[in-house]
Amino acid sequence: MRQPEQEAALKSDRSRLRRAHERGLYDRESLYQVLDAMPLAHIGYQINGATSVLPTLQWREGDHVYWHGSAASRAIRAMAGAEVCLSVTCMDGYVLARSAFHHSVNFRSAMLFGVAEQVTDEDAKAASLKAMVDHIFPGRWETLRPMSAQELKATALLRMPIEEGAAKIRSGPPKDDEEDYALPIWAGVVPMAMELKPPQPDPANLEGVAMPGHLSRIRIG
Figure 1 (tube, rainbow, N blue to C red):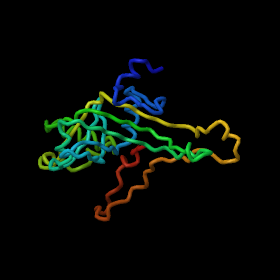
Figure 2 (tube, one colour):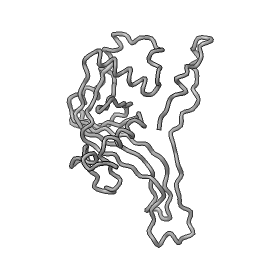
Figure 3 (cartoon, one colour):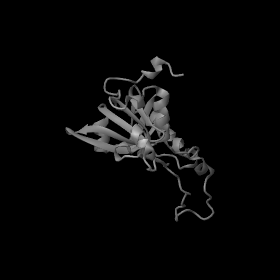
Figure 4 (cartoon, rainbow, N blue to C red):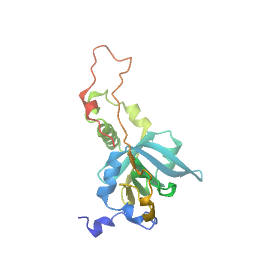
């Protein structure tokens, strides 16, 4: 059973849910499960006084979330040392109710607040970039051409401590008005999942190069 101090670990005035608060979770385990299930994140930040959102891949190492980009990126430069908001969402299904008002979706989401920190130590950068590749494609990094010094220099790496945020989850059937359950209207859930299709080889592959076994170990969702 989740302990009260764990439940409130990441809760703050800006991260607590005001509406549908029963769907909010503030423990690390719940947030970690959502972050680890969905590599695509959207990061809100300010650039030249305007609010922008960057879609990018994220990965978690311990109690930090990481993302990378070009060292020449205006977005990355604007984020470094600044307040950002990072969110990920897994959509699990459409919820069809007996009224349009009560239609919904089943989902798992996580939202984090904090200050983005740029990782400048080259060894730490290289280790985290390896972790990113191996998180999605376990075992792939060791099969690749080694990263060059110029590639490492051209890549910026940001991270943020997981200290403030919330997970929000909806699951299960529709919740209709009590009197509507007597109506002859079909209601239920249309499940959905992100599906990986069979790998498509590059036409430029050398003859005889076989598909690596690690592609069969990819798990997303």
